[in-house]
Length: 88
Image (cartoon, rainbow, N blue to C red; front, side, top):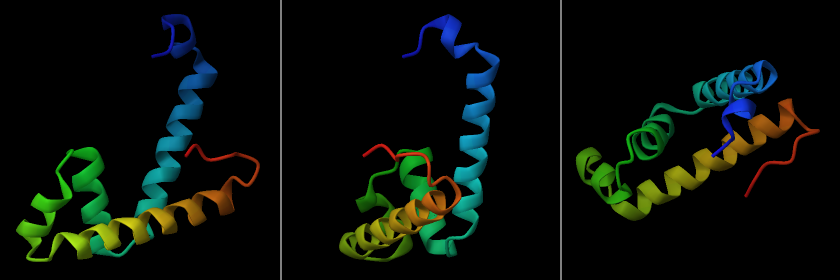
């Protein structure tokens, strides 16, 4: 958690907005299943097993879809911000 002063810093706010926009732009490059899996898992905190069940796939397939999507996102973001190191 950032201190209140740092979290209200206008530069930090702009940086967070730019990062969020880049993430959504990157998500737009994914196929619909990849995007659906990532949004449901990371935004709505749904377990992969539940996503798989609701979409009529096995959990292993959804896990591979998630991994493939994350790899695509990483490549997209690295291509646009090569000077930034992505956190692991």
